[in-house]
Image (cartoon, rainbow, N blue to C red):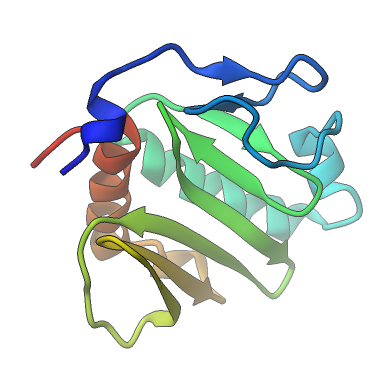
Length: 149
């Protein structure tokens, strides 16, 4: 199921920007991105949305951030979750699973053959980051580590 991930080859690190990837020369936009630059001008409530998601995700295990110009990815061996947009009005985030779930909370579901689904969730209240979201994030965390259930 996770054959490419379970081999545990060393990650390739882009010599220009330091981004980490499972395979060499993966396409990406090199840049010196940071959490600070991602949150520039977004306000305190935006940061609170993000920090609530981070706290929830840390219950799954340790991970690192892989910020880009337009998103912040959560990464273990691979990127398993991401925050696309965050503002004073809410947050849009997503995660990667190896199975299909039907749930009205998803604002978008993308299927990537073979057996990969990326789920997008839009929230407008921090209370929406609940136990159900935690269960999805922990499952995505396992996918990111290359672990089987």
